Length: 157
Image 1 (cartoon, rainbow, N blue to C red):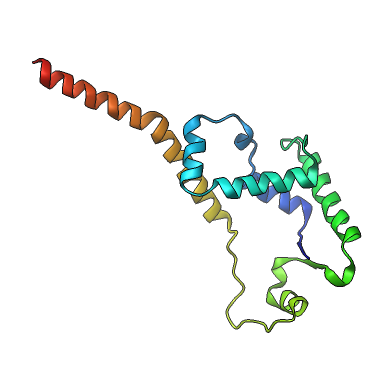
Image 2 (image 1 turned 180 degrees about the vertical axis):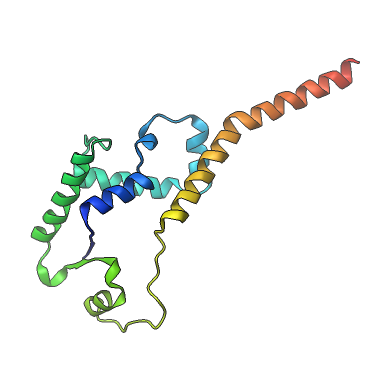
């Protein structure tokens, strides 16, 4: 078992800046969920929510920073107490390949350690999700109404 961990406050700041800002928790229009599914973010979103519910409880208040921090710390401690130490790597990704490869008994790759969970990429995906959802909800119906009005104008003149 590989338990990735980091400073709880830095983790919470990262969550609030990317995958779980408080605004994400507000009800969304149908178009938002459609676009989320269309561009492939639904499985990622579901994974995050399921992970947090497991760690914090099904009735956790994701808007409460203290509850999030306490849940993060409790989850980390629960895993450490539950998993036998010989089967557990408590891993901070800033350590790079070495501890991970040693634990997995694999050679260290020659390429640099990947950083795929970057803030800018996550924000880009969420902006795309919001813009596409807004277009689907407002732009597309407006375009259809304008096209219909134009066709009526052509046929009725």
